[in-house]
Amino acid sequence: MDQFTIGKAQVRRVEELSIRLPFDMFGASDEMVAANAGWLKPAWLGNDGNWDMVVQSWIVIVDDRVIVVDPCVGNGRSLPAFEIFDQLDTPFIERFAACGISPELVDAVVCTHLHSDHCGWNTVLRDGKYVPTFPNARYFMGKREVERWDYRLPGYNHIPENASIFENSVLPILEAGLAEVIGDSHAISPSLHAELADGHTLGHMALHLTSGERHGWFTGDAFHHPIELLHPELDEHSCENYPLTVATRERLISAFIAQGALIIPAHFTAPHAGYLRETNGTRQFEPLASKQA
Ligand SMILES: [Zn+2]
Image 1 (cartoon, rainbow, N blue to C red):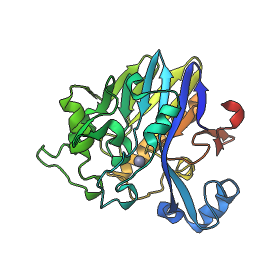
Image 2: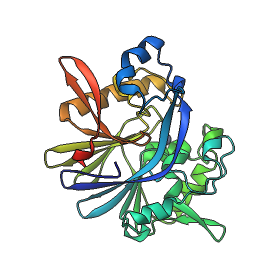
Image 3: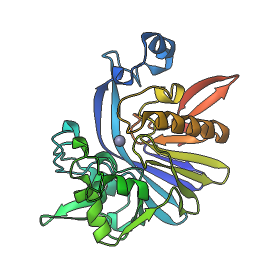
């Protein structure tokens, strides 16, 4: 689903790429896979044992503002320790423009966290220098997250897979004076609030959209696959703090169910978003249907 509404908010999707990865990365038991095969196959688990991880950004038009959530990897980034994102050359910006939004029209960019695939297009390389892609935007990034990845601070914990991200995608924004470094709970606009949802990274945030009676959650990487909505204890070994991830997932899951919220993660394959329903104690993932767009 490339376009849908939540109350008065319009949401548009821009895809950077899609990669097939082994489903066994989630550590689901054979019994768990068998019990969920009815809805997992084939959309969420192919017969080859793989799943599609999509890298995508969300554009939210709400409160008379254009807000970009998680601007993907970027072209030409040197990420030798994370081969699937190394030296990309995708028409992301052309696809972005095809949504009817030019980079100059963007009022705000929000990075749920500062992994390579969530802040890369913060900047573009121009004349040998990384400069802001969205020159008129304020860029919202969590204080915990900015401090986590600032290699200049004492105690910095280097992760090769995220090498150069701070230098290329964050520092130029700070230096341009376009950054809004925010606390654990922050109103991006009247309808969109950022809240700490940590664990995947130490300052990871989720965005809660409220419009009229409707709710949506941009969940970044709190969930990579819908199996984690039903089994939040699964560990795909990409988290900085796994117990915190599980606690965050359980808290978010309670909110999704109570609010009837649309869940809009960073990496779900088509239709890219959905609901978690609970009936008589049984939970079920319900992908967003085209009639709801
Ligand atoms: Zn990610």
